[in-house]
Amino acid sequence: MTGAAGGVARLLLDGLRPAFELRLTDRTPGPGIVVGDLREAGFAREVCARAGAVVHLAADPDPGQEWSQLRGPNADALVSVLDAAVAARVPRVVLASSLHAVGGHVDAGAAEVGEDAPAHPCCTYGALKVFAEQLGRVYADRWGLRVVCLRLGGVREAPAARSWLPGWLSGADLVRLVTAALTADVRYGVYHGVSANSARLWRCDRAQAELGYQPRDDAARHAALLPDDLAGAAAGARRLHLT
Image 1: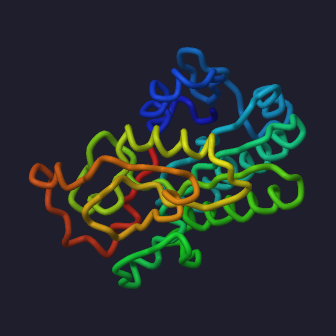
Image 2: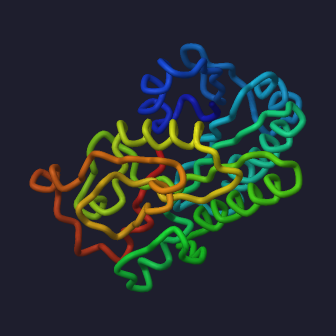
């Protein structure tokens, strides 16, 4: 698992440990973490060696960053990891994409966004997630790597504000989603990663049908306690954080 010191990984690790033997890497030190820079081909090959799968979470998670800051962690490191996975004959890579890849549909007024909607990134960060998804397809087609791209929503134990209600992904549902992505018989696919939220802006029908993902949590149960920021909903897609 790359990006193992990040917020998404912290919500994921305990849920995966009973079923999987985990090898962790990040640029930030932490318990059990192999520290290194994935842009370095040798290090990427080292951490991928003998792995049964790669869960690639490593990235700059700030959707407000520009290309100059995002290229290294969000593009160059991705290419290095995919190359290392092919070289090490890793059979499967789970890529953390983002709802920012289709957030432009929300900015344009869409009331519902399905997994078959064309890419419409709302920012440079989202455009790089589209790049990751499409590059994953190339590696699946050319080298037979199984690639599962998960467009994660706002990943926290509880939504941060009312604008998060449609796109929230709970820690428990994150574990269910990634476990499904690691075990489903899928060669390549792009799926939305949200909980079973009453506000049905982001549909995840394909994730349920093809991965067997069964979300259980609903952001609505937190709604009464959240700050009301719906006046800024036009920018809501950009505030879906991958931490």
